[in-house]
Length: 281
Image 1 (cartoon, rainbow, N blue to C red):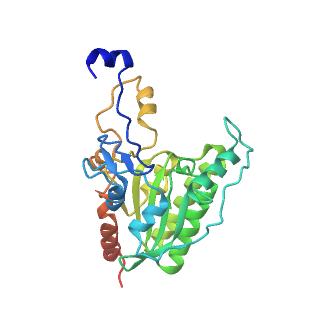
Image 2 (image 1 turned 90 degrees about the horizontal axis):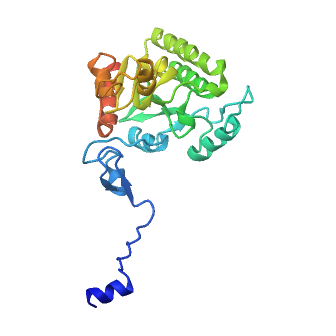
């Protein structure tokens, strides 16, 4: 068919080949298209730029704990709605959505397990559950996890992510800052080590309480860590430009608020080594 005939019949484009859902993922760091199975094998870290994807608690458990050793505790604890809070959505509906997304009753998994053979008490927050905000259920689960760790003389590891305090619960949410901090004080007095691992993002009342109270403070690369976010700070400073990398873990480390940045692919080995150093046999 010559060019004039094609113009009469209309230009035809090749049909895009359809790909099954869930085969590819796009990196938010470098925009590369990544094969999901390869991404899973690299523990959800882009092999081009090192971007750490946000992942749920179940993937962190597979990464950090020895296979078959995870034992969950206090799984039934769930948030209530004391204020009968309602905005664009009812608070109770947001809780139901969080439960459906994660399969958990609260924004944190707590339990015990082995890490390269070392017994540990572990808490893993999940951002899919209302931004892993800290409500009364989260505070209660952390408090009970600390109590279990003291009872069994276990090192405590918290894998932290959060948008901050859960304001739908008002003062009950804010008091979890004092509650968890008090329990960590007792934990420290008992001579037991606490390691906090901050992931993207760790902000608000969680940063201002248990996230920053670890004996050792670790973070994943390029994680947002701070109290108020960069947008709020920029508005407060009358739109003054913030330094590049502001509130990212590399900047937080340079200013002395972290001990180490650890690639997720090295996290289990690093944590197991630290636990081995800190706990005498």
